[in-house]
Length: 443
View 1 (cartoon, rainbow, N blue to C red):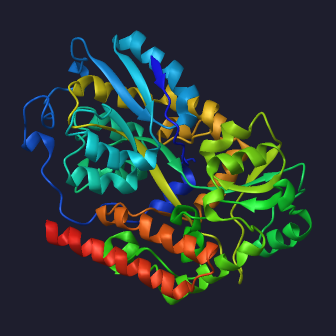
View 2 (cartoon, rainbow, N blue to C red; view 1 turned 45 degrees about the horizontal axis):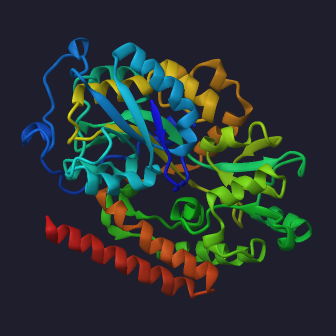
View 3 (tube, rainbow, N blue to C red; view 1 turned 60 degrees about the vertical axis):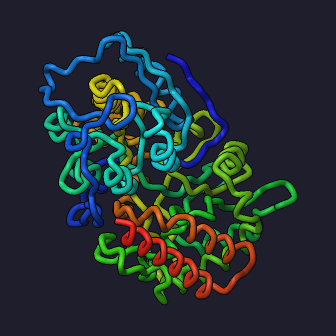
């Protein structure tokens, strides 16, 4: 196995029981039109999507001479190396890793897949499934479908299903919560007001000492300010792209409060990166760090920390975070679909799910692994579990792809330039609506 590291790093990806409750009753299927599937539109081997085969799981063997590439997060490399070594020993297939942040992989797959430059196996958050499935970029999880349904959490299986077809191999369940440095605070704060009060005496920008940081240009981490008071992304539990609630009066109210928090984090959004806040938290210069279970491994040997639910907003409103399911998917243009399906399945089995948790803190979508005492009795996991009780799954609509960039521009203007909150959100929503209409017209 070889590791090919590129310079880009972004956020990554906890446990099962409370998330199952938070997702139950929520529609995770995407709207919009689904394009044909690879099995319906076969193409020449190296110029089009590979067709799905009819083989049974017991008969699935790697293609002769197969070698694979997988795209993964940098934070997963320590877990991947022994897992891929074991895969090669079992199946005789070598795997090369290329570092590509999970949120970037769908767009990269769209560009590189048809050119036969993409990885055979990719890692995607479930909200991008509508895009890649509609574009016929990933193969259905057909041969190993029954095993996936039997071994993975039902909610995770639903999240990696689009238009009634299972595509993904669920890996992890994720949201973010509040890391706190136990050497700096005795108890985690319950409200943002408590953090603001702490910041007044703790902050020292001249030495890069701050009370709290989160990646504050991203809608992903700012979702609580949109939703806690009554805003939303798309209506009908994220299934109606015609109803956009990002400029709802309650969203404006929440983002106005967000804007006020610059007084306790006087830093431009471009300067609050994952790497920056991770380093400051490790060094004891950051008391509270909003991040996910994917970062547990970065802190375990550097700082004494705990994990608690996100602080409440004014009025005692719980902070509602985004939750999601990351899964592996097989590139429909792969020359080795059998080997690729086996790799995606192998990396998400119980043994590797527990190994991944031990190494990175990533909390599994595997049913049996999620019930293992290793997870159930972990005090860090319990903090994420509590936050899962106050989380919404990201919409899996293809139109979700049109949300991120306009909202990042609006959020940055609101924070950096003290721009009018309503006007900024109105502009973002109009851009999103225009892009959604262009998408519909192009179908």
